[in-house]
Image (cartoon, rainbow, N blue to C red; front, side, top):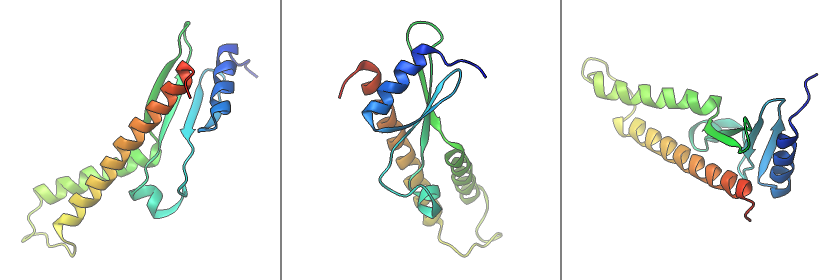
Length: 134
């Protein structure tokens, strides 16, 4: 079993102390998810409340953090982008659909807005912990 980097242990302790994150210590990096008040299951998880994960590595002296959407958020990004592409490219007279076109645009706008907000809030919270702020 590989030994964990002591610098990662120090960072892990800081993130656990902050109680804003669920921390998963891997041999070469930390994996963080921001704790949420809303449930992490079901339709709301897919459509309204996407999650992002942060990966922190310490290759040299200072930590490097990367914040990206999780797997479900990537999937929904592809689905929403595909839905918007279909609405723009497929003629409704030739390919009729039973839903209004505003539905796809509205769902995509809500999803991408909440994804961007989640990304900014998570990055802000990670940076606060990394610099030792409140």
